[in-house]
Length: 219
Image (cartoon, rainbow, N blue to C red; front, side, top):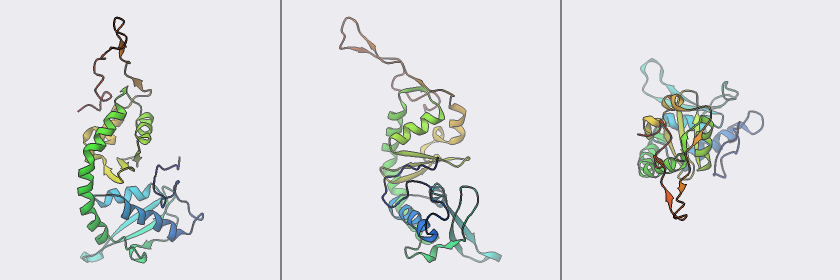
């Protein structure tokens, strides 16, 4: 269950665990790769991405109205923190809030450019299903290089081929966790295959609705 889809040589294949690697280095490898190789448009996406590797990002606010924001990182077991907090400024690549938000500006443009292609790919991959289960939904997209990260509240979509990370609202209401949970079925149903024309075996009769997404995912 810790298996993570990734094509990056600097990201671990599995979520990192306390005591198995040098903590600061292990956290740094995940954070640096996310920061340099992937496109984000907001802090929440970045936090959810690194959390899938058992790295918790903490955003600190100044006390008493002080005008500053800080970021620290900790190792977790998915629920509880397991290591002391490490300041973003402790890393040479400085994943500070200011530097992250500077990168988000470029990330927004790259995400918008790649989004039509991503939606088209998702549609093509899901099209064979009349109705779809949650497991098949995630596994089908995973097979196309798209990881669906579920934190129990919302979905995060990671396009590992284009190195772009999308919150569920980026892709429209039909791809939000709340909506999909109301549409998933226990067992997927595939669409009927095209019917062979007996008079002309090389001709296939079209199946009604064969070009549509699974029920509930149609706009």
